[in-house]
Length: 69
Image (tube, rainbow, N blue to C red; front, side, top):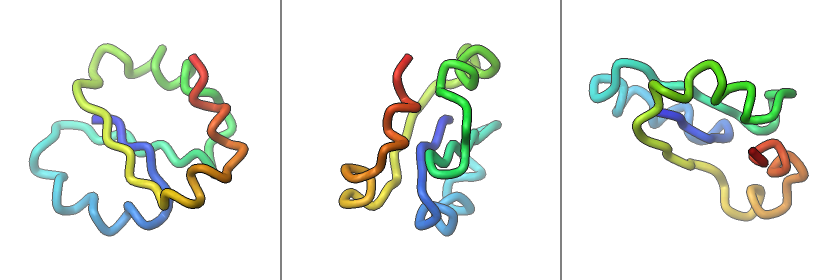
């Protein structure tokens, strides 16, 4: 699973950890690479995508451009 997140999602991860072999946490504020770098490495193993982000902050962030593929 690919989890696009901010810090508020950290407390949720333990609840889903048993459901997935791998959870890739991608914090737009902390990652300098665009998402294509991540998808090149993990793309074939990603079966689900979950976005857990404060909506107001998500809409205001300039980091959303990192999701361009």
